[in-house]
Image 1 (cartoon, rainbow, N blue to C red):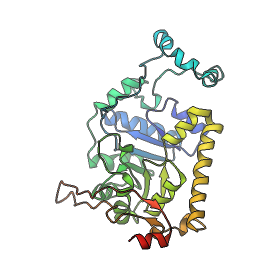
Image 2 (cartoon, rainbow, N blue to C red):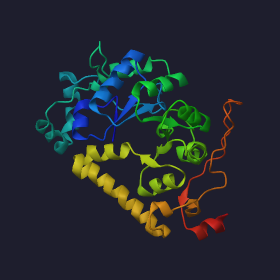
Image 3 (spheres, one colour):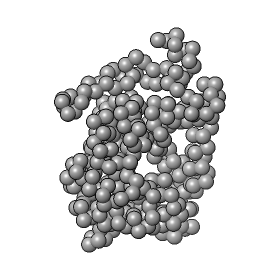
Image 4 (cartoon, helix red, strand yellow):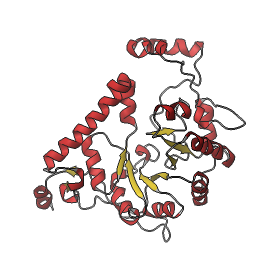
Length: 314
């Protein structure tokens, strides 16, 4: 389980509940601030560090962002009270919890400034210069344990990350939120997995909504798949067991159903012969060391299909 810098619960409580915790680090503040958070994660026994590079600056969106108050005070409580009343089951859970939401981000704290509020933490992150490749190597030396860089969208970047000490990378375009018309991350996955898959673990995230999506990603070169929005939807709808547990069961059932319909006994038996891919599905890119231009082929979806259908289509 990965826990973000922007999580609302302290890392101490999360690790206590789940010792197999990864810490997702945003490059925010000075190097002293980052070192403070890394040392805190070390002391708590965090299993791995995830450096987030697919969101190194705030991206404005044409459709705006959800209305989130800067703090919970009387005015905001009155403003959002009608919304809370429309979700009585959700509202009744608060008296059973040990704290009222304060919209602070305790995992973005620093040694001198304490715990910032959500928007204060966002502003610190936005104002922090983006890291260079040397920063990845510095973080690897500082951390000393497994380090995954999230997220990579070009094979040259993947190679530089691995050369800088990353033990894993995640192929992602941050859900397509940061740059309009960005190609689907799934199309970049095989191009990245082939050259570095033998030197580092390759993971995938972005757009995973069902078990069949997981099968596609694993078949195209990913070692594992990350999901974020799905379990958040489940948690918001019905808590940990009824919500998150149900999401995981749906994904597991989707994987099993896909394997049955492909006629395979396990994911290990699935190959690209089981995928129906358009001829120009895989992104072809020029090296950034010789050209700043990345050539993208036209988009096309991937479909899980039978071998006979795949052969006849091509």
